Image (cartoon, rainbow, N blue to C red; front, side):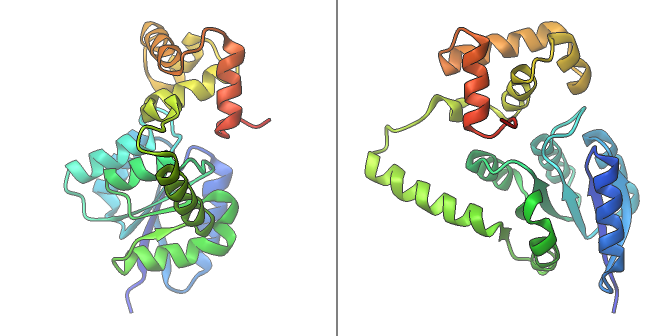
Length: 218
């Protein structure tokens, strides 16, 4: 029986090495490619033709959501399984709408990754168990509170959420721009837009939002 061809896209070398070793040990899997950022991922997909791509959301150059959209736009046939530290339900919704097939938290990878790969490869969707419960609870809560209940945080785009992570950690506009391949002026525009949407004026308030939504460690 042919092995499932797997590609791994994550900017942490140690994590990629660990995943590669674990997956290659499985008799049904073969890791055929690795990438450290979004553009490398697109190039790798064209060369390696994996059956399943394990993709991190927060990567430099091109974020995970944008990468998923571009893969689907190019018509590359591959199942996409998101593996990330972010348990934000809006990320789940956005990336699944973009064309991902599954979403797993890194802290659950040791127990759910194998199942997730097999599930999405078979043509089904897979969602982390805790996230499934959280989405259902929030759906019921939103229904009780009415259709107008909306936290301004959910108005932020995926790129704006990437920027707020770095801002909350104390990165300068230049440092953020270097990581995301954007100009400092563009980052300053993002900063203003984020603060307007969140209705905040001080950095301490941005940090509080980042902590609330688990974008940075407390």
